[in-house]
Image (cartoon, rainbow, N blue to C red; front, top):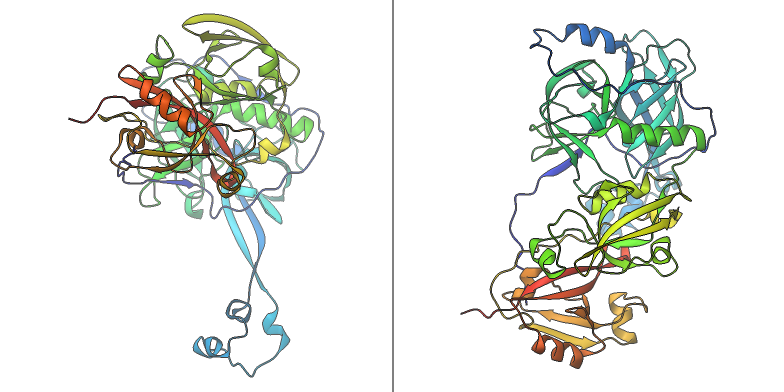
Length: 505
């Protein structure tokens, strides 16, 4: 059975520094930064403003330009061509020239341009991680251009794309930080930065959406805006109509590489959380529940699990011995609340857990077998190897069309050879999907060759014969599969999908 891949014009997620580099992190333990925070809601009753000039004059001195450089080593032509004299002659190299310096790698300096905001009078600066990652040297120029400082990288956090710098100065003009949770769609925002090294540039727009996820960072809660932001704006502030920091500009959606009306900023509350920990602890410690979650919950899945709607996070795996397992979480549980806050989707639950201190008690409300159940978990600390793992849950087309549920799917028993070939862990049990007919419903539902069918309609699958028997006995318009799929970089994970159980006419 097949999943027909829809042909979509692909857009490009563009990080806004010029260019982006690799990750560094400096351990440090410092006293908390002396921030100016104003968490009062925006006054939305103010009449239309004719000029933002007073706001720009207020925040301008707090916006800085950031220049980071790194040494890039490039292999010589002889290294690339090897010792084949015909190839070297073709590319203009003299094969008789045996000078050793030809084999030495050549190096050059690459520079990344970005922006940032001063957040404390004693020199702490908030910016984007990709502006400074991998840098040998970081310089910060004040908005006036009259003063330039060597900056120390206090810490970086690639999962949120946030970095904190420190310059040796006092009595600096620092920006006021607002509560980004009080931001609303339609609020006026200003993006300030140094695009294309033109110098300080200000653009205006509105908040197009909040709590966006685009799948590029491990933890996302983006503010989407149509305020024009371009290369070099990365790390610069997104401010509200009162000149308060409500976001850190980080990336754009673009087909051309230029701004096309969709930009994203890390909300100030998430940026501040990360910044506080980088400054005081030298790293970001995150809460850990020990579960895997369904990337998307469709109305069909909601029907299979007897859910009132699709707002929540579906548990696909509970790691043995994890905080989630100890709390009584089970595969198929649907988490609808975390510490009395509504859970809208997988991304939001992951973010909530990550922002809760390890060792804290967490109360969860789940739907199990159509009934609500309350659980209590003591969160652990996110293991370092999971923080470093860039594997994303595999996104598949979950649209279902007409066809016989498992018609067109060939399965085979798992053995040592197939486990090795498809990198399937010993803890995964089921049957291997050896082929999927591209015109079948299973393919349209998202089933692929190399997947392992673990359950059919909540029944464990032990071998190919059991899979056939269970699929033949399946009743109803749809059947529910629990599938383990290989992921990027060798990681894999389970997810649920539903398959249309009717035949094509």
